[in-house]
Each structure stands twice: as C-alpha cells, then as structure tokens.
Length: 319
Image (tube, rainbow, N blue to C red; front, side):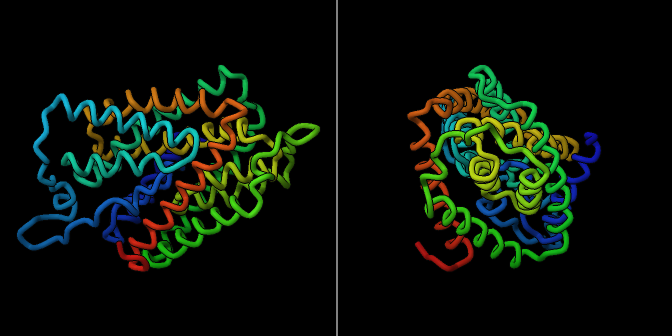
C-alpha cells in the first residue's frame, strides 16, 4: 500500500475529529487513549478567530526549570515506550504531560507520533535481535490489519461521538473479559506444529484492523489475543509481531501530522530518546519466559485503569 493512501486514511480521522469538535481520533497508536484523555477544545467565539486558531491556545505553563522539564519529558518517554512494548496505553503518560507543559492538544497529539514510531522501531529491532520475530507470517498478517484499518477509518466517518464513546467502553470491557476468563490460554506455550496462518485465521485480523482504524483503543490487546489464541503464538512472539503491526499504523499518523505542521520537534525528539530506551528495555523484558505472567498482569491493570478512566469521562463514575 502506498504512502499516499496511508496519509489519506490518517487525514480522514483528523477531519472527522474536527467535524465533531473534538480532538483528533487516534487511529494509529495501537497502545493509547489519546482522543479520550485529551481535554476538550475550547469553543470558538466571534472574537477568538477560527477553530484551528482556538485549538492552538497554549495553556499556562507551571513554573519549572528547563533542565527539570527535559528530564521529566525524557522519563515520560521512557515509561511510555516500556508500556507500549510490553502492554499498551503508553500515550496515557505522554499526552497529559505535553498538555501540562503548555502544548496545544492537537500539537500534543501529533508530537506523540514521534516517540511512538521511534519506540516501535526500537522494540521491533530488540525482538529481531532476540530471534523472536516471525517476519514472513508477520508481513502476511499485516495485510488484513492494514486493510481493516482503512475500513475502520471509513466507518468512523459515519458514526457520531456518543456512539463511538459507548463502542469504546464496550470494546475495552470485552478485552478485559477475554483476558481474565481463561488466563492459562493466554500464557500457554506456542501451538504444536507451529503458527496456524491460513486464510481463516488471517481473516480474524480484519476486524481487529477495523477496530484499530475505528478508534484504536486496546487494539494492541486484541492483536495479542488473536496472535496467541487464534494463530497459536506464545506471548513473546505475539508481542514481537504486534510491534510490527504498530509500526505501519504509527508511521501513517506521523506523516499526516507532519503535513499539517502539528508536531513540536523539540518535545517529540526528547520523548523519542526516552521511548527508544524504554522500548528497548521493554523488548528485553518481554522476551524472557519468566516475564510472560507479568506482561499479562500489566495488561489487566492497564485495562482496568482504562475502564475507570472511560467511565469517569462519560459521567458513569465520579472521583
């Protein structure tokens, strides 16, 4: 698939979010909750200019020295990269931080693509050096993931924000139920006879890609479930192929935000430094047999936090 097609797909999400007067739907970071944790954009008034101008209003920055800010940004990138590699939702660390230090929400969302891509490359290289990346099957399974992502982008363009919000909550709860209903199947060794990559098993990744293109929240968890339960990989090799999937979709989002000049390169590069280190460490951790149970536990914790945050966002829980 050409770069132009990927950029067009990512641009569709950006236009959709603008039409809904919300932040851009993050359809490409299969590890985050970007659209749901970004604060709502202020209303446009007659004296404040266009909606795009209003979206660039910079929040008041807390008093902090440049040196401390650099350290905090790099550490946030490190934590985000580790979470993205071994579980999901690393963006829940970086996005609030960027808002706190004064970046407009749309610029924070675009800037977040840099550490996602840098960390994705670092984790994939780490898995490759450990010899756990099944490149042939990973590339084959990337086809339905990318095709589903394109279809998900089109689906997102015809649903309103409220419908999408409840779909997100339902998907996160479903991912949690599938994880905890039978933990042993998620932690079992690779299937006897090798991975089952057939037309039928590959078709399972079409709806997973659809979800990645629709909203993306917990798409990484669904990727792992499909790779482990359906295809027959163990959690280590499934995480490696998940990193390959994420690479394609994070690259597309970075391109569209670059075209729209919605990237703060200084902050993005600082985050990327930390993300590379965190993703490398996460890759080393995730390739250990003894770490599989901890990866599973971290996934469960992340999803529980997401459920609480989403219910609070939509007014079901108050805390």
